[in-house]
Length: 156
Length: 178
Image (tube, rainbow over all chains, first blue to last red):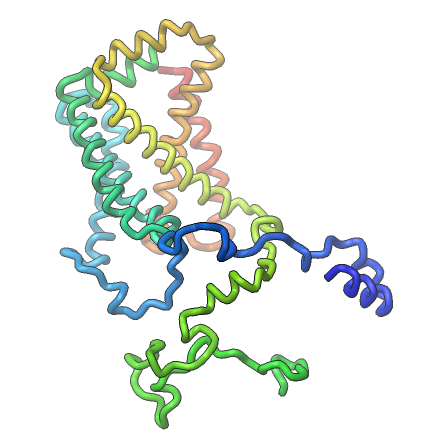
């Protein structure tokens, strides 16, 4: 603690250390056992065997990564083209590629930060995305459509 | 016992995370055996490591309070934050408009009826335009990295500064010229 540290610094002559904040009395700790957080929501920290991490997927992860990059590269062309081509087909292509990229990207973000606390988050995100995509399709086909909406907002 | 050049009295020289039965038996076993199992010994082998540490209430080492923000990490954070922000805006708007009764024109007229000043409207346009332009241009930088191009530290810094400035310029073009 603080007092013994003060004495040892003073005795050894390292007086400049007395002016530095005493980091051994920092208050940040792990969430205590008595905090009431259900055991289920504590971080799962490995080590994981390869068999535990494998999962049951249709694609190799490397193939999925390739598809993600193909969509990302296609967006490099589609987004400027959308400024000049304003057809409903272009609207659909634009909406779908942006949505796919956003879905996979946020899935990776959830794997980084949330999965260790709540593994079923991926199913939850999948369900939310389905509703969002349905909303986007409804918006494009039964309402003004994305390009017209941006145009209308920009004219405010 | 000696450990990293210092003499430690009465302290275990090096606490292994776990020692598997494979490493304990002569010859070492195969790589498949190198995971903790029911015969493992060591600090983390019994599964009570985190519970014990929570009960001990030891202070954590400083992390965010000593972090030094750098261009690389801040631009990377900006990429992630703009991506998440756009995603939440798109998903949120899509689900909200899907669930509410009126159509888009009706709600846009509601917003127009608020008679927001030009400063607020310009700020709103920047909030919509900058994430798109920054994430797009930094996305090109990310794709270059995925093809193992432009990793040198000087390249990373110069491309980062260029991307950030260009994103502001193009966002300004969208806000003021459209």
